Image (tube, one colour):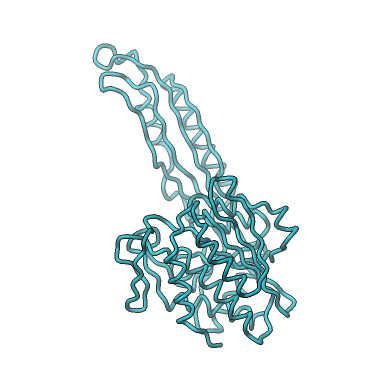
Length: 375
């Protein structure tokens, strides 16, 4: 199997040169649609962006194969700011920038690999499975594209395979993620009682003192091997001579089961009740889920078959449980059996981001090996 690395690199550089921050991916979507049409592939557009104020559709396509099997590829089109006017530098086997912007390898490396793989298979005389591809907007700001897909309408036009490969994992290509947490945000509001802090402070109930004690009793950061929690916002704004009567804290909990999420959040709620009762303060505890759980639906059978493809090309791949969410979480909720593979991107979401070109090539090679020899 011979791939044209220069062609893959050119696709990647063309994609990176197109400015496409979250909610403003229209231009890169046009590039992808035109590319697919040049391959004479069917395209279905889901206009989910109308639900969150974006400007680019979720793009669906299908490459009909001759084998009696099918798979779906997925990558997202948006990038993290600052990303305007990217200066692409190729040096020492890496793509990087001049240090003033992000590169956008997250996830344009995934998009480039997907487009090249479709072209390679389409132009080959080889037998391969049917391959679907989904390109999403607004992944970086809550997976809004994947979250808002109108699947009822999609299925009237296209029925993507439920075995899905998401090309959006950081680090070396050899990691195959099969499990990712669900996440809940929470908000704690404490209401105390105002008083003059210099004349009669004992008549007040300090919301800051109360919420500080609540936080001190909460199990935070690394709770166990697969559960984390964090408070990222703490606010109360009063003059120094006033005992504050309001304070608010906000944070998140991530866990690999819904039962664990409930256990942690219910524990926080009990702490709020106990501490507020102690001081005579009031509280409000709110929580909501921001993305669902990702977990193998076939006891890792699909993931292990993909690991075998890595071994066939000489790479010792590893199964991985990760701590972050992606489009794969929402696809999983829809019934997709998703794995996430690395594409060689490093230091993502920073202006030091770079992409290891050899790893991007390995990701492409393992995809083609899987499609051509592992079915």
